Image 1 (cartoon, rainbow, N blue to C red):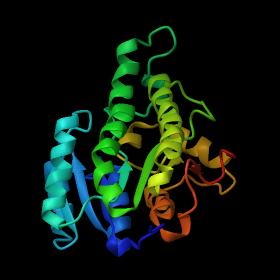
Image 2: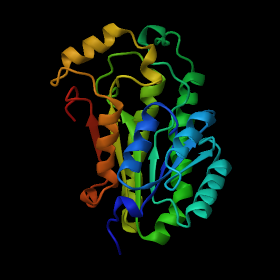
Image 3: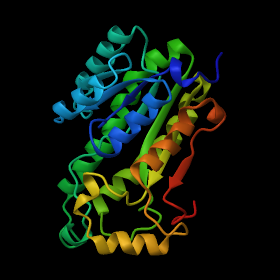
Image 4: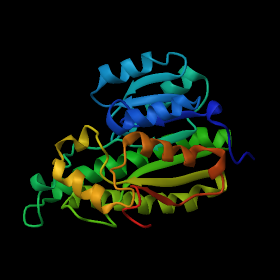
Length: 257
């Protein structure tokens, strides 16, 4: 039984890894010596360029995480390419969403289709990657699953009802999976951010909102995607070998978890 392995022995999948926060997550793991599968849905050019920067360590693979068959195919291709199973999954993929509170549906306008779209991408996507990863993780006797969450269900300052509900459900899944998979030496954790300066998703956020968040945060600044990515490394590192079912909030201290 091995409770941890070093980064240079891990094959990491980052879903939605071509752009935005995903790219920072990919680069953080590559920097630490891991091999990384860069999953993308439509951003082929960005994903392939990122992989080309690290030809020995990275592989770009297209798959819709809501499609279980496509996800299974991705895992098989990754194992064939690198000669080892994916041992670490970072569930970062985000369904289409604009982080602009003024443009989001309020309680009167919110439809179930809005909520369902977010649940499909966030919860179903994470379930698909987890299930595809289990055979390889069990064979290796080691597994790390890290789900990307949000601080908005603790600090719901904007009406992102659909997105926030799906991320809250993902936290619940994180905790139940940690209980279920612990005997296999697979840990399941969440890293939750707030507004990040700046990603593709947060590009629509008015500057006044960035200023408001910075002023309300102990560090008096908005967390960057690179800072968030660095914190995510902890849950894949040997130092977290006895940590599972947890939610680490990385937002400069705005939310006290």
